[in-house]
Image (cartoon, rainbow, N blue to C red; front, side, top):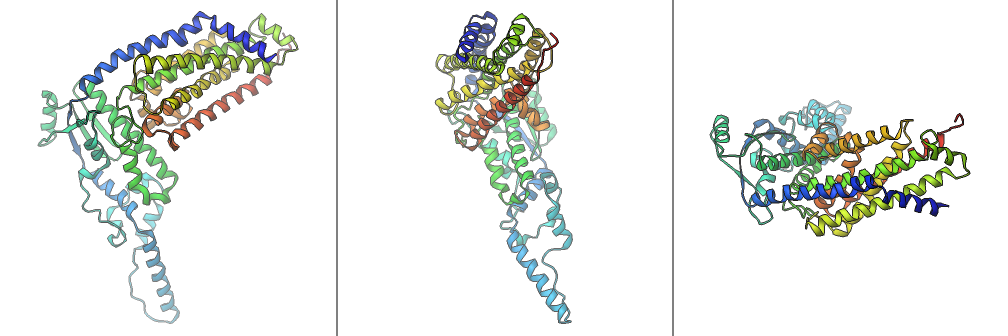
Length: 468
């Protein structure tokens, strides 16, 4: 019975002109347009350094010194000295002797350090709170060029080895703004904090897009590191390595990336295109669910009044739609990689595997939406299109920096947005290669699948049409 339902739905989907157009032919055309729009742009500028003026404030240098002080703090030595101090003090008091020795660290300073349990708490700690004798290295020598962001833009190179960013000297802010107005520089970057970086440009252009993407990706990686610090404040001694690693392992901007094979800043648009095609599979799976509902059409009434096992029917049709979507996505990916010669970055076998797993997100999403409420087919199709296009926009399909903006302001959206979840998997593969970050993305895809399917099955089991 499962096989009959499977084959029937398979044939029905293949014969649907609307479904094949929106999930195959439309994305193929859009991918071709992306290719001609973006590839020539990147090729035309990838050997030309982008001139910028970089302004670093005293606040960010102090902020970095504080964070480095937390990282370099010898807590073991401080605890041993405190233990010895209190032991000697207790002994002296017990023997009635005077004890004039000063504490190795003041009580206020100790409380301040202990109360700093998040990144925001840490950067508010005054620098003079740290006693230099408990720091493994001196932080006084830290200067603007030592900041992680400054190291990143200094090390950035195009694929041919040409430096990507050229820092231009200037006298003051007014002089920098005049250089920008005259077109001598492409932008002014102001570093106010470790995660507060502003970009001022004069109009729009390719260089603006690249600079904006560099800053957005940097801030995204720093936010991830800060989340790690907030979750494990006791691991602040690893702060230096954590920040340096996260900010140097950027997607397309760092030659030090272990897996970032494609440095083209526009490749993210193709990641989002694949994600959109995967999510479009939700239309077919939603239609399968709605067509089997007795309150929607005659076919649903017949199915509901027959001895057919509803769960078997839905799973068979879902499997058929998923198979078709996988085939469509394989065609799309093959066209992009071998037809248009795009480099997605990472192992090609893992790219295909990621696409296969991502295909299940769309069909599971449609399965869930199909069971929500009692809306008609047309209403649910409209809802899906809004969610598909809206999710694509939020993950960067229309504006490449949008996902980083969302991550900085409301990261929960990127966790529940299916398009962003899929894009993260491709990004991790290009950025880090096959490793913990990539596996984390894949596990998250599987979790999203399981949650949506489980909710869909629960809602399906609760539906009743006895009044029909």
